[in-house]
Image (cartoon, rainbow, N blue to C red; front, side, top):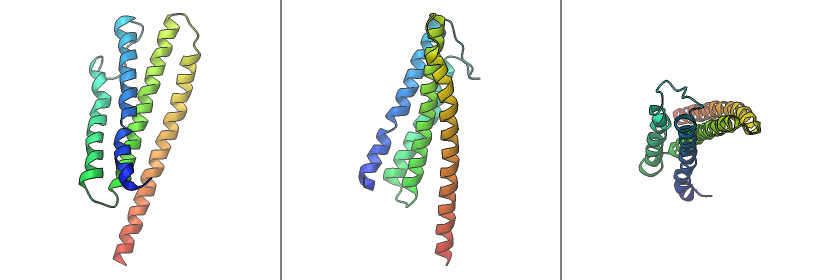
Length: 154
């Protein structure tokens, strides 16, 4: 895939975190306001916690667009990829929160708790994988920039 085809693709990837956020909001709304079997643990409280992810997603989308189409820099594509991957990671966390609330609703309904167990397990594993991948990516980008600056000086 060449760079020009990759630029719109990175923006299209933002559909995933926005969809996961929407699932989380809908299921949380159902669990909190309809069934009254859950509560919001976010310090903002319900319903203001709904905007927590949007505070990241919307500026990240705008900044990614600026990096890809407005700023002509060698590293802008790599930084846009990093920001998009952070948004996808946050989307995974929204997805897992939605699955967790589906598990809570399922427990309340007296059903099987298998979905709840899977959501807990995958939330722990995926968040750890995502966290360490982002740390590694930041280290690699930092080392790459240091090498590039050193090469320019020589």
